[in-house]
Each structure stands twice: as C-alpha cells, then as structure tokens.
Length: 191
Image (cartoon, rainbow, N blue to C red; front, side, top):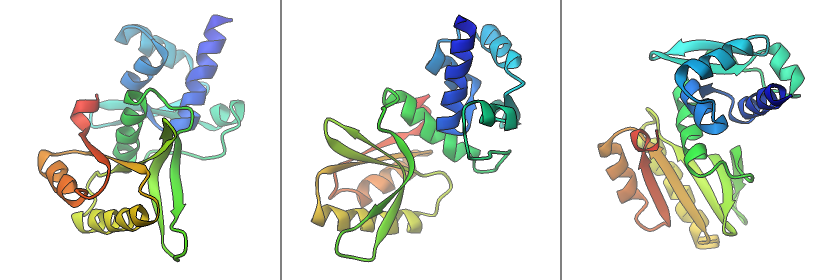
C-alpha cells in the first residue's frame, strides 16, 4: 500500500513538472540513496519513460502513466528539457508551492499587451512570476522585463524571479530589473 502511494505521488509530480531528474525526484519524495531511487524508478517503467541528456536520466510520463493520473500533455524527448529542469529546481527550492502554475499568461489591464511567465505562484499574498533564462537572447529578456516594468506601473505588488546559467547573464538581468522587486538565481545554486 505504501509503495502504491509513493508511486502515485511520483506520477503526480511528473504530471505537474513534465520532466524530472532522478535527483529531483529523490528530493521531492525522499527516495533515499541513488541505488534505491533507481530501483523504485525502474519498477515504475510501466508508467514512466526516460532519456539521457547531458549524462542525466530524465523521466516523464508515458501513455500508461498519463492515463493513470489523467494527464493530458504528451511529453517526449526534447531539446528544451533543460528549461523545464531549471524551473523545477526553483519549484523544489521554493518548497513546492501549492499555487504554482506553469506557463501563465498575464494580461496587462487597459492594454493589448500580455506576458507569458514560465511559472507563477503566490507567497504571502504576493504574486511571484518566474522567468527561466536558458540560452534566451538578452534582447528577448530585456523586452520581457520592459513588459514587467509596464505591469509594475499598473500593479507594483509582485515579485519577479529569474533563474539563469552564468554570472554574466545574472548581472545583466539584475541591471535590467533594477526598478522591480526581483530576485535572480544561478541554476547551479539551486541544485
């Protein structure tokens, strides 16, 4: 019975996060040491598929797994997987907020402008918008930050959270976000 509950919890995490590494699943579900985690995940191969990316095994729901937890999104091997993993590391570090939603569209009231945040959640009644910067052009990041600055003139009560890969990119994002309530993280610091 305990094994079935753990299995269900892992499948629900995969439904919510799309892709997870063994290390992320270990943190989320207390799977113990590497060998035990691998044994558990191998035993779930009826519901979970995997591929290797940059020497890490990435897990996602297969057709049977999607059916078992009523997941609609079909996930396959993708070059975008690092983007998902970065977002998921932030999700884990932030305590897996129950209000967390991926790919949230934010309409700017009174304009035809909108922003699609990589994720959004609330913390202490404050909206937090998440942006993941993985190989995105700095011009696109700057354009998105301008939209958030526009949003802040309408409603300044939000936090903007960035996850990026290098010190240079982090410093650039911080300088662009100077007028906003923001926090920038290096991905390596979230692992």
